[in-house]
Amino acid sequence: MKFKLAFWVLLVGHFSFGQTYVPGQVYFGANGYIEYLAGNLPIVLSAPHGGYLEPDRIPDRDCSGCVYIRDSYTQELIRETTEAIFEETGCYPHSVINLLHRKKLDANRSIETAADGNPIAEESWQNFHDFIDGAKRKIEEKVGAGLYFDLHGHGHTIQRIELGYLISGTNLRRSDDELLSGTFAENSSIAHAADHFSNNFNFAELLRGTVSFGNRLEEQGYAAIPSSNDPFPNAGESYFSGGYNTRRHGSEAGGNIDGIQIECNQDIRFVEATRKEFAKGLAIAILEYYKSFHYDWDLGNCKSTAVTNYSEDEFYVFPNPSSGALNIITPNFPSQIKLLDAFGKVVEIIPVFEEKTSISLEVPIGFYFLVQQSDRLLKVEKLIVAK
Image (cartoon, rainbow, N blue to C red; front, top):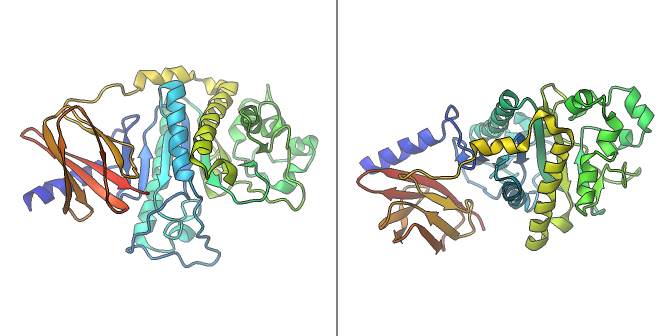
């Protein structure tokens, strides 16, 4: 009982929102259903609909207009894009992932519809948005301005990436002069950019001109709308213009974080090799889009806060979540690491004889804990297995 008590107290501390987040490290919300990779770039990524977990303690949402379809492979895509950005810069974007299936929590809706009154789902919804809000505050305090991308998947017939700025397809079909004469810019999710860079680019150019994010994707070989090549959806064509997250976390409501909803077509998501290649293109498009305006900060500055070493008393596990293939790095060896299930039962004991250990776990999908205990420390890492 003493071991289990110490174990759970450590986990409660690990979930504290008041803590200092280390760039490159993964943290979880209070219930373990929201994953946050702390960043040191002025870029925030989120995936609200890519979760697999369907815990029985959260009932399926049963609300009018509820949507239950998961955005397939967006959880994988956000991790691959994060990795690609790191490979390009040596630094990390802030990445927030809802690990719950959309049946249990829709993190791209207001809390009433998102959680359907369930307190556990409501707390997870709050964790999801708290992580994003915290990342945005950090960016504004340190850098002044930045970018937010909400990552989704669509099943529309036309295989192109749909970019949402809170401008409907009907309004995108307006002329540039009409877009510039109304209040479209100030009511968009890039209102800050439209105002801040107005001396250099007008709003129509930001939406679908040569400096638009759509054009950055087109430069990487991916069809996107709106862009110079495809400035608006034709009447009758399906198009997502942005949702709750784009409105809440973009600059339409104020602040200096511009937001874009990215709806990825199936052709670039479903095949692993194709998706990974797209993740590299998406990473470059994001970085080039940022550098187009600079947002008054050099991306190279992030390296001063990058994590390059681990402390002598810690061990690291990756990838996490994992399909079962796992790498463990620890300076404490020889030793053993216990794999515990969510109830604290020992599932497997992993012997460690060198600094890096690679293993393959044959365990069901779910939450686990890796515990390394020695005379000097008790170290716990949370592990998600999702196949």
